[in-house]
Image (cartoon, rainbow over all chains, first blue to last red; front, side):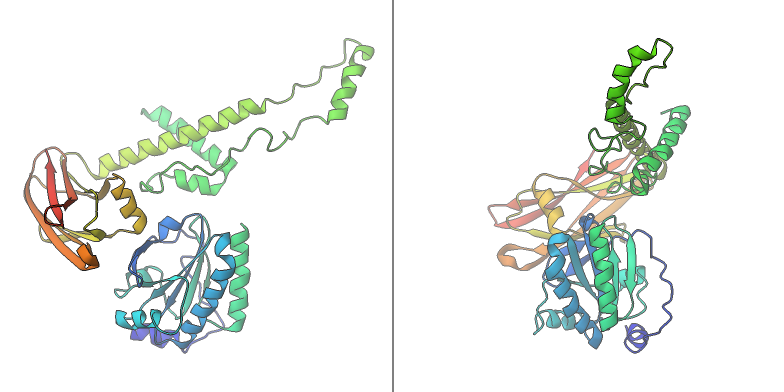
Length: 162
Length: 233
């Protein structure tokens, strides 16, 4: 966790390292949701799925979750699914966040063992993946800013139009 | 399936993947699991009647003109080529799709036979009846004190189980002899309280395949769920 935070929150490098899963099938997983029900990625074939890895200690993550929530409100009917995957060691922080002031319309999933984070090679927080309707990882965003938000919407629209 | 037929069908798969796109070919690739091996339902056949005109079909006015011009030109004028039979093409594509699905099924069976031979195979299934007193969340399975699977059930999967579905939770290999299986069931029990129960069985693995079933039932008299493991002889 400490490594994820150290690498993630501060660093916003201009040269984005390549991401090994780009163009490959998104590895399937099942995780507990904060709301109680479990979620399996493969059940959402046919939808555009956005996975956002976040931590309750990461400031930009909160801002990004809010931005993702806005995009879900707009594009849900076009077949968009968003999941926020929490990588905190302490699940209670994520639960507290979920039940706190910020209300999100998408499910927050818990990955305390970091099995999914390791599979998806998360090296920065927040990290957002866009998965197309065929289950292929198409885009990755390794930071959050106004610029990356525009890029996210552009990429999202292109996937929804396919 | 003999080897010649397999090679022929494999060639069809390659040809068909060019026609319907790489996504379909990926689904038909050998070695995929049961969930990805399902036949595609949404891919439209390439030659669906009415979807597109054949590329070499003559224009309508040219065809009409040839009808009147043909007798005047004499007998040595070559006849117009017949319009391609799109219906036949469509049937051919459907036939190829069926062959791909059949081939995929055969390869899946072959893979299972190779990876899990009948003399060492152990399969554990899970079924659920009623479910008024227990909402299933996950099942952890240990064989000979070693965790072999920890499976989270989504609401869709639970719904399928409640409708009578049976889930193959685990497929593996075991030596002949005595073994112990322990299953831990987690979920919500009566009054929506967290509920975790275990069940165990000691079974004898013989030469043939061994099938075990984890059954979750409602015990109406005690208003509690009941967990049992059935050994299918």
